[in-house]
Length: 411
Figure 1 (spheres, rainbow, N blue to C red):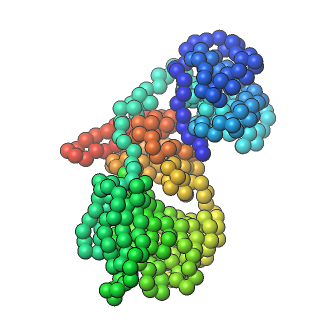
Figure 2: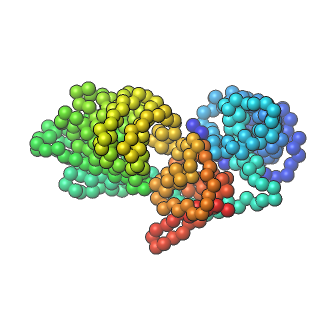
Figure 3: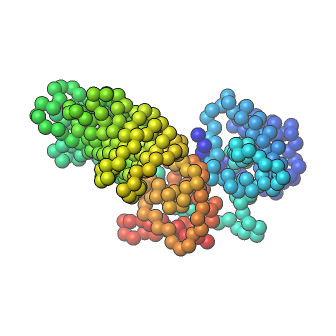
């Protein structure tokens, strides 16, 4: 995984030639164990500023070898790539470096030297960097496991407030909250004895996510501002559920009882598979297949397509399209990450809005940019916005009664 990491003190003026190869080797070993001094870190930071491409690649290879025995390190955010590549271009303009080597060299710079190196590389001469300080003042907590369960009789249960244990008995099915926060449906009696299908709905607010294990053993993860409606037991010819927002599914195989996922505008039929459905943007619903096979249908036009792993359908208006997708980006939210490749500001801030439960307003004429990187969803808003500040953005938090708005502007 690739994370943003802050490490080490602020940059101080030091001799750029005070760290020879022997000293660098010693620093890498100390860094790998977490035992190094401020002076050693500062010396490495300053060496990075004047190092060449081959030297950076060599450092990366050495640290990778050391780091194999210590997997707990956080890796850097890819959001630093553009500025770092400019630095590497200056070091070696004539030689074309393969992308993965450039990224490797860039990664070790940020991982070992810290964010301060990035600001050194990215700043303009005679410019004071104030945006990270501005972002630090906007300290909204990240989201977490929050959801409301609506039972068949209309009773609601706020899951993040209630202790683990049995919550309800619905039509022969026990509803429990596990100690680790998951919601579990278990058939304990003669389900369906009332002769009617009984539905529950799980709803996550902005700043919420939740996992539910359905009575057939299938697992569903709900992202923020989403909902899942489902029968408490699957007794018919189909296992049919409906969602809004975004959900990731791991479906228990049952060829005699296909699993159907409905949104307002499409239907996904599966036998047993893993896939993600993103319907946040009603005009463009994306279904991404990780494993197995699914049939996606437009409920309006009847157009269908069968997806294979690594393929994604996009229901754009009336048209159903198919393309490849970045599996890491699509499923990262389930693993606790925001992950982007060439994402727009609008896309990034839409995720921010849902997860940190704040309205985001983008004002003025902000130049287009592509954001590539991964940010942990556990970060506070201040850390998230500090990373985004490198794109010369300004952030301001306005309050209107109990509501808050994050205003995003250009310099």
